[in-house]
Image 1 (cartoon, one colour):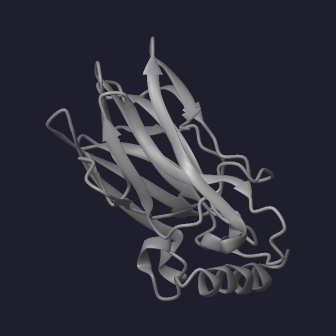
Image 2: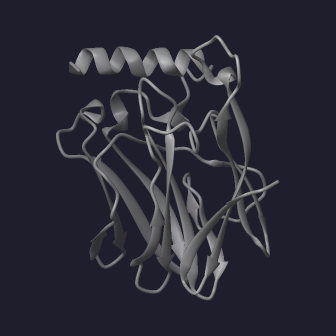
Length: 204
């Protein structure tokens, strides 16, 4: 797809979802490079989202964790356009604007929204060791699937001792005739940790 066509599709999707003008989705010329500021284990950490080409719509962003001493660690995420999408709810996040949630035992759950135009975005989830910032497990969104798409402008989250629940698309609405966000039904997907491995379960 040509670059200008990608831009047009991105803006059309934003308009359909009521997101035009929303900085949270990063759908503008300044979104090729943006940062999330974090405080992890009492130390400042920056997450750099940077397009290799300088054009966000080339879908070539690389994500790196950068410490105050300048050391960097590239996170295992596919090259893509990532949106600065924050949480809706009351979870305590170590980063802003993206959520990094404490999962206990020195682990944190990082959620980032990946563009999937012309379809709905997907959410990539990384389980981080908060001391080393190494990724110990991950769940990447599947752009080709209905299950797991994101139809809200924010990450709707709730956290409990059982894990972190995220509102995502679970299925297409039977008989829906519109190719739009209303044609998909949401549910709660729970992320929990068992022996330093991520577990996901749809809640009944």
